[in-house]
Length: 325
Image (tube, helix red, strand yellow):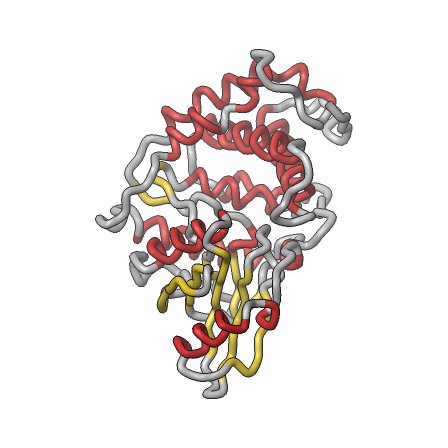
C-alpha cells in the first residue's frame, strides 16, 4: 500500500448546522404535527458542507426520521427540494434513505427521509466498508440503467464541457493557476487535453449519483452501505461517480485501479476534470457553507492529481511539493 494521506478534518464532522432547538418554534411545531408526535430527542448530522438543518429526530412514540430544513431563499432549500423529488422516484433496489414527505412552512422547505442508523466511513477507508459502498453503487448502477421516466436530468458530458474544464481555461490564460503541486504548470496542456476528450466518453443514458463521495455514504450496523444526498444526479457513464468516490480510497492507500471498470483515458479524464474543479474551488475564497469546505476541495484536488500522475507514469515528478499560485 502507498502512504496514507488524511484530510485535516474528518468527513463526519465538517458541517456547521443549527440544532433542532435553533429552528423557529413555529416551524418545529409544524414538523412535529407532520411527524405525529412531539420530538423528544435529536441528533444533528455532522457531515456535509451546508449550514442548513439536517438531523435524526425521535418522537414520543419512539419513531425516528431524518429531517432536513432550509430557508426557502437559500440554495440548500433548492437542493433539498430536488433531493425530495428525486429520492421519491428511486427504485427500491437502490440503497438510499426512502422519501417520506416534504412540505413548505414558515419560510422553510422541509424534507423527511427514513433514518439510517449508521456512520460516515472514517479515513483511511476500511476495506470492508469501501467494498460495501462499491457494492451498493454497483447495484444502483444496474437499477438506474433506465432512469425513472419522470426525471429530466442534465447530461454529465454537457456539464463537464460547459462548466468543469478549468485546466483548459488556465492553459489558455483565461483563469489563474490555483495553488497546486509545482509540477502542474508543466503539464497544463496534457491536463487540458484529457478534460477536453472526456465528454465524448461520457455519453450514455444511465442515471448517475452526481456527487458520490465518502461523506455521502453511511455504513449501518450490519455493514451495509447506503448512498445519500441525491440532489445532483445526471445522465451518463456511472464510472464517473466510481472514480470520484475512489479519490479518498486512493488517499487511504488502497489499490484503486483494480476497483474501477472504465476506459483508461476516461478515468484519467475524470481525475483531470475533478482535480481542476476542486483546486479552483478551493482557491475561490472562504466558503459560506462550511469553514472546512475549501480544505476538503484542496485535499481532494491534490489526491486526484497524485492518482492521475501515478497512472500516467509521471514518476519523476515531485508529488509532494505544493506551491501557491
